[in-house]
Length: 121
Ligand code: AMP
Image (cartoon, rainbow, N blue to C red; front, top):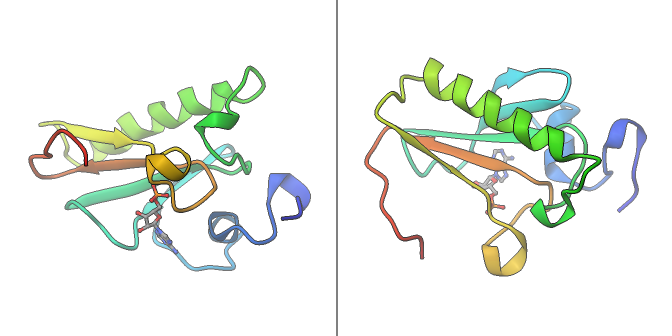
């Protein structure tokens, strides 16, 4: 995979969503992150929040990029509020193969609008 300008990777589907070459249903965008509806929703609200910079997984978080994760949680709380999730919600990150990560561009699922179950499988 080749790194193009602006931290975009050439064969990453989430980088393609960021640059508009794959259409998606955006609900939020700023200079650091975008948020869009998951194509296969698991709850009435299912949003993915991702950094514009291509970071593969939580395993690649370090002191140079950890500020983005704090920002993602700020955006998650703002979106949850706007989407009426006052009863609660869940933020999920799947990391690498055993964590169930299927897209190798770090993303946080914001799920809500129903009673969510625990523990995860
Ligand atoms: P994960 O399994 O944690 O890596 O999550 C990847 C998520 O990306 C899944 O919930 C998919 O439904 C979602 N997804 C894959 N392709 C798209 C797409 N083109 N637009 C929106 N969501 C997508």
